[in-house]
Length: 362
Image 1: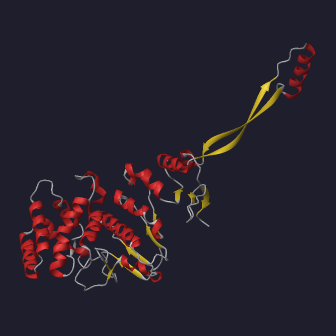
Image 2 (image 1 turned 90 degrees about the vertical axis):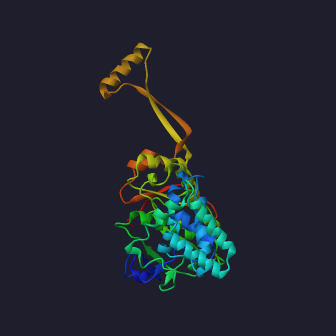
Image 3 (image 1 turned 180 degrees about the vertical axis):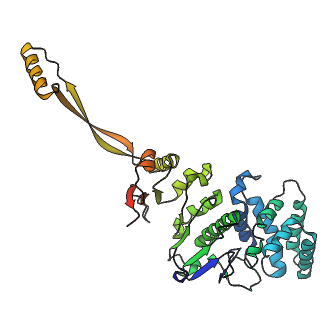
């Protein structure tokens, strides 16, 4: 994706040579907004299996901790502090309770007490959130996601200005944490891009690997990007990395689609379906052997067959207009040469073009 000098900001999460940190809360000061973004990152991929079928309960549980902590300390909790609170550590909860009493934050104290009561209930989402946030509470990330102001955290709120940013996620040994951070970046981008005051600049997010990042909430955010003069490029090795219930909605939400060489037939079937059909003119040529009735004609036909080796035939041409797929699943899987792709684009005015074969090597 280019050298470090080609970017204004380079965030290398998990690497000590990173000059910037990543703001875990997206630069917001609203506890409810921060809780919603963080809940999407932590459990967005498993929200469908949770009670209620979404991440709203997880967002509520996080807000019941983020709000009181910010009211007491003037900042959001760090990853270790948040993990202790989600685990229900009595020491952490009592310390936060005392800080709220000293600050006179009675409303936030009630939020904290509500979280304490719910933490002991069966099926509480707090334990799951604690297990997920523990993936970021690792020695490799000890110097990241700092909220005390000792490092330079990068926030996607900076989209108000022209900026080139690259965020390198840890690839080895922290695969689940990388997926979680990818969902976090996508959730922050959709919120910040839509909330910009100045939308004259086009904002774009490129996800090198969008596997396990497409969730119902992320899909709703992607659908709002076009009206906010923003967009996202999502690369997938296969559509199997997207939940089956979201595949058709994802292909319908994006304006430009590309199927590279080597796709499987079942992936190609999805693209063939979304690209639809077109009316084409076909010509059917039929050769029909002439059966002679007259004796003289039979003799002439026999002589002609002996001379040419072919029976006497006549051709009939039938011209029809039929509806056919622009690209079939079999063609996408087997007829696209290496280094090529089938691409369809949609203009900013919503005018779509047919899928065409393009050479990516030029």
